[in-house]
Image 1: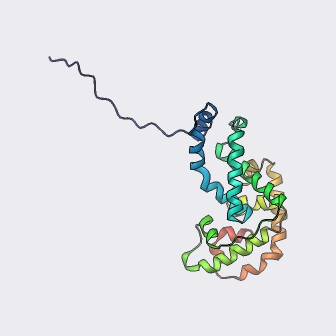
Image 2: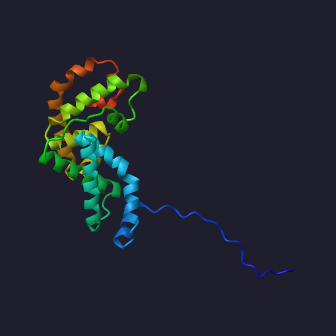
Length: 209
């Protein structure tokens, strides 16, 4: 029998990608690249949350930037009681609400940005759906900020009441109440949209009017 002194061939294994919690822990331990990875993973989705809440792309981008700065500085406050993504969404929503309280946000300038945030719009009916989305955005701007945030999360982004409550850091009953009051205020402003052709094809639109 012949024996070889050569080492056995190395096994090539793929290391699983670090979780968000792992990256946040690495950031706290001084890894300069960890938080950058978190930003790259979640920036676009958080921008959609901010755009839906504020209705303005530039304000949304600024709110997300503010939120990431806050998250970077306060990473030690994360206790793991919810997912990192939920923690980030909460910070983004709070940044949006702060901006809404400080100053009115100008309307969205380009209807195509609504399409970027809501891929359910049919190419065949872009113009009509965009017009409806713009009307809803304008109506939402007339609501109190707390009601608007609740409606954006639950009715437009499809969050469950419980998940929205976690993001907003309020009881589920408060989210239900805010949604109910917000919908009641939207009905007279948006009831004319019920007769628009194609409305039924967009469930997010239908729920708020």
